Length: 231
Picture 1 (tube, rainbow, N blue to C red):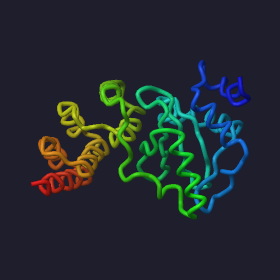
Picture 2 (cartoon, rainbow, N blue to C red):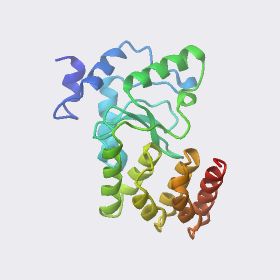
Picture 3 (cartoon, rainbow, N blue to C red):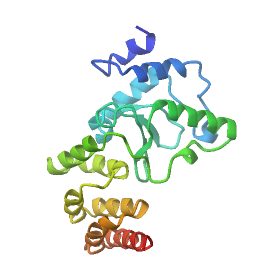
Picture 4 (cartoon, rainbow, N blue to C red):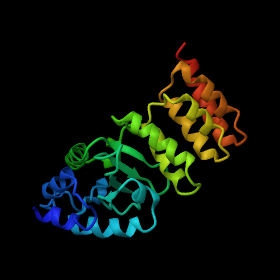
């Protein structure tokens, strides 16, 4: 067992092999203290300490088995996800904006951090617009549905972070969520459709556009316009 695996035992019953390998890979400190490019990847001890702190209060870290990977002094963090169907992916936890999954693997995250330093570019400039789609879409749709139909509360924060990674194929669920009193959910659906419009999503976009809250309604307008542009 590597030193990384031993320290990660405090977080996991069974340590993910990619996560243990990642901490061994960055152990030389070459990804530390590049705050000018928002690159400051934690060594294992700091990651465990910050993860324990966040796990006490943050629903995304709690529900998705998150591990805090960095702190570039921006109040934003990259977070490794260990819970299916998002296992292995890296989420950007945005303190003042939308959180979403931005890298499919730790290898992609490290590659972006390396390029950020070599190209003198902010790490966030390597985030894909609107987040990424994850491979296990059936599992993702089930997770979103379970969270939506579960007890009200912290699950909404997780849903908002997952919607950008969904394939938007569950029209029935999307319509239900687009009609939700929580306008943030309807807005997130409208924005997701606007980024990846399809004609069959027009009925969902219309529900968003007809939402009583103007912020959600504007997202629905953007979605309708994006679908109209396909014709």
